[in-house]
Length: 483
Image (cartoon, rainbow, N blue to C red; front, side, top):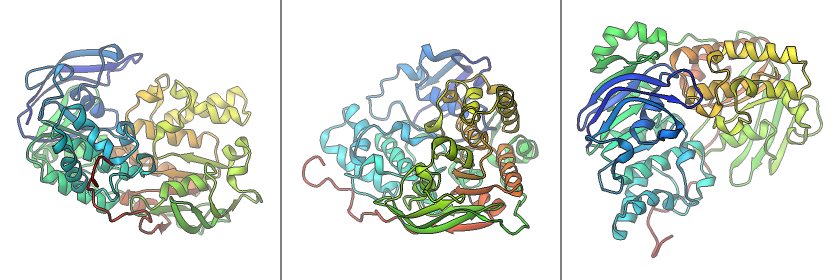
């Protein structure tokens, strides 16, 4: 267990005027479990990165002090058992470093000098605790977002750190997987835990304290969950925190969907997607749900014209050719895609430039491009970040930027992979309302999602993909020597 002390701590990323987090005074005792809340962009992920010792001195400006068990996180000896912090990032793909799943979990243990005889039993135990469904030889490149999230968590749990830092650990998981992770976390008693989670109601049984960051700096509230929500609940909900008990207004369409925009007929991708048939019409929202590994993201790539199917047929927009054979400008004008990992679609160094890429590709005049960019910056609460590097945004901000880039070309069809990931309550409502407006204006929307609130509020139809095909019942044992 670790003790955490912050005195006036702050951090400003290089090249940014605004501080990501500032004036934080906080003391977390040994063994405490803390839920860290605040609107999107309040600095939650930055604070976790600082506690993990990941903010290099030359990558920004620091203020105040931060200590774990009396020392700077960047100076701690992370090789000692029980020392240092273990962190699971918002985007788990960024912390997978090995080609095979078992090796990835073992990587940290080997770097800490854990005796060889102990490594693979600890790997097996960690994979079992998070419900990882594959053998240790499974390629990390073949994992879905939710499966990668489980693997990243297993890698951290295997280290048994004194401080456990979790940034949205269930965000990409199906309901069963999320419940399993929460069950695993509830059984932990060896660590001090700081958790960032938008699923507040589900997270509350895991914690004994809530800390709310003030977007402008400092700590808004700190105390037992029931006391914090009783005193600040209304205000927090208005400012974007997912306060339990506050309902989301439904935005279902009352109209009959228009003509079909795109249709998949027995489309499959070898080893990634079982045959599926579905269509999306103008003026409707279709939610694609299902367990991790069922092929939802693969289906989104196929329908978005970014991946060729290995079987079946995709057709739409009156074009005899499948979307993956359309010219880039044609595809951009017809279909807008949002990837599961927003950083994978960023191609410039400024937020405003990112929004201008699509309209410029379509040959829009400079004045119109400027108008489109300004409108989207305002509508998606990104105006204050126009000059920022997209890769320095918070997870919620990056998600809104990725949605904005898809909207910039005014496509008739939007294919969105986890569009509400990382959003606080206010930006979630604004984003869902924007999508409802687009639907009512005749756009078709296909959304891959694990967000049941999104489905209940917006989806006109739901298509559930079946159980993942590639599940392997082999145990996580090391067969003989190193796999």
